[in-house]
Image 1 (cartoon, rainbow, N blue to C red):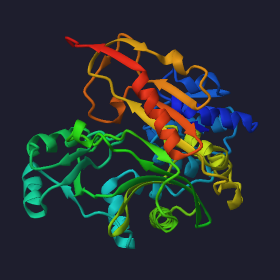
Image 2: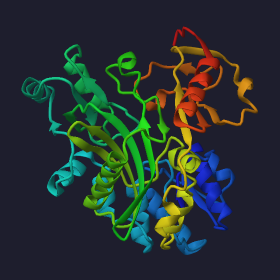
Image 3: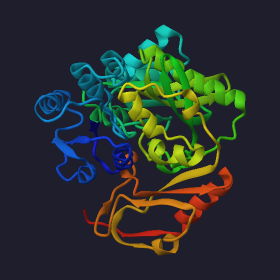
Length: 404
């Protein structure tokens, strides 16, 4: 069972089918792209634990036994863990998924276990935020405790309206809870590790690109990433091991750990981790392109209770891979031009748009507002980056001011 049928889950659904598995996909959207290639479908919100659990139990008893459950590119580890626990399937503990779904609970656990993290505090009111700022100074980061996709995440500086910032972050929290943390200078890194019986291997290690911090301030918007890293091997190892330790601190002995990490002057620190496969075509495309590791296949096998030999998930090579995003001017899209120049270009792995002519491009306030992306390959990381930037420069998403 794959809990997510969106575009980014499609490569994983295909991989499961290629493995000869019977695949049931659950998603709230009756037109979810994943349904087109699944064997069976369940209509249920991936974020609604009880609805998905009820539907999965019904399917398991009346249609076909479910042998494993996973999510791909969807931030629903609590739903996955709950289904696994109810049906007696392999999976991470429900408690680990619950901790990973609440940033305050997660960081409290990290603090208890001695995991290196930035200073943080829950914020209970605008007045409380002002008190924190007067004590800590700038910059800080404010964010919802339980949101995703960079919604409500802001960099607090002296020029920002703190009252607006507090209420903006609060508006993006389903539980109406907000936190602040120290803003860390240093290289931001995404890791993706497989842990089995407490031992972890990290096939995913990419440097994240935040070149537009000033352009989009106070919003913290990522503009992609690239592999392989230029960081020394001892730094890579320290970052990877810390992310794996963080996963174990949450209670994950077997499963996937996606790390949002920063390498600072004081060493590596954890911003947060997710107990699931990543989105952004990182787990499905970028890691296999860069390393030759079939991460999705390995994750599916683990979800079915198999042990995957560690050598199978160690990088076989490091090739250049880069992803960059499109940020057109806000307004109504009139045309997307010059895409044909890259139709048969071997080093363009994916050129994707999340918008089309007639759509309204809004101001960029979180990652859901990005208009599209390109994934490129190269013999080196610098070549892959240069190629991605060439596509971004060449392809034009034209807009006109909207009255909307």
